[in-house]
Length: 213
Image 1 (cartoon, rainbow, N blue to C red):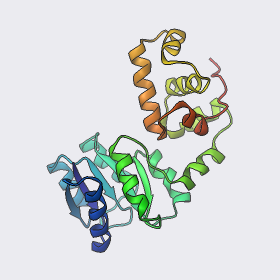
Image 2: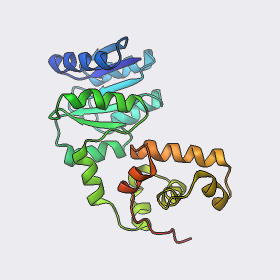
Image 3: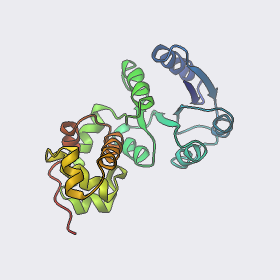
Image 4: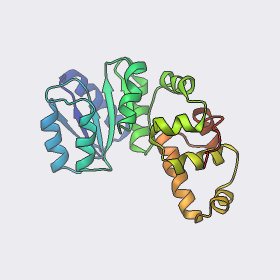
């Protein structure tokens, strides 16, 4: 596993390097103290994980996410910032980051965040997850207008059926889709929402009204 730390404080890089190697013993960890140099490393190396600070030399806020993903779409991006997570976490995840880890978090959460993101899951703290639930739009049309968590209309429709308890085969029959297609949609939905079951999904997308087609 190849990881890249784009962070302008050497002490912070050292700490995160130790965390990554605790989780992935044989990880190759590259480091950069400014974004432009970090982008060069992404172009030259097959980077699996980028741990990215927001405020650093050459930084371009959310544009940095697209710039990294445009080079290597499969690269995971974990935002590691001192900005208040209740105000900024959703902004960066909705912009395409795979997780948001506050520098104020308990250090025990660092490894959990790294592991989750590398394993194709979204990482948000419990505080932000609770925020998601309280801010959740109460009907399908509001969710659709906001493109919430980046779900497409079809993914929202399948989410609604999963929450109702339908099996993958039943959803395929109802929507006249191939079973493999529904399975792929389900995997993408779980990844985008950072969940592993329909029960967890229901805590994020609850009481979703039927689409008005």
